[in-house]
Length: 283
Ligand code: PXL
Image 1 (cartoon, protein in one colour):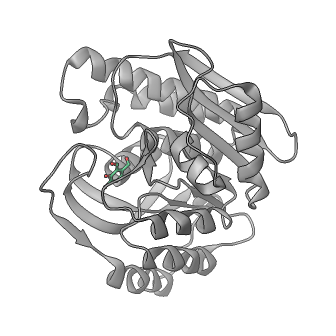
Image 2 (cartoon, helix red, strand yellow):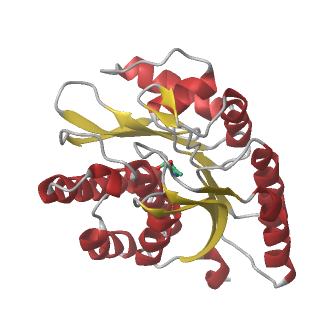
């Protein structure tokens, strides 16, 4: 059933302006040869990072009916991928959607999107953030940033630089919750570098991919990274290779975004790098 293997159900918000979540996951996974179905958790005029006055339509009441409708029409997925959620109740609903569609070889990736730079995003409550930790237990792969990982593990936020000991402690802590594989983004061990580290329970190896840091804060890059990571894994890359590829793809998009001089809230300029990613992951 190759067809189902290369299909993904993506559960994220749809932010119309300011590329992130679904407006990133759809093109990135498509470029990797994955057919993506979108289950929007909320519809927003813009994302919430650095914008005020955004229109926010929560889709909690529609989430399970939409998933049940998918089931009734025969939708099946090789991957389920969740990100930004619209309300606390959605956490239990996403767990239910995972059980509705999970088959023996389905890969479940949870990106516990809830904050950055030591702070939760505007629409996230502490209860929602705690629920995200619960959702991570259902995943095969989790890909938090340091803020999210520290919250999930009940550790104090550390702004970095990070020691190998800290990176291993966080990754092992995440895998101890249940996932086979964990990836930590926003990792740096010395000034001037940035990337991600990954760990899997089988090899117990920590692999770190770092590239030169481009100054500035780039919204939507966590979603860009996780989508590329999933694209690599679904095309048969090992975790270390998928993580290194996602770091390089994200870095390329950041270089282009920085060079454009555009407001970084408008999202990463990744479109010109999709062919590179597609060729890299599809071999
Ligand atoms: O990129 C993470 C993200 C996703 N969705 C929404 C957001 C953010 C980060 O701010 O606001 C709506």
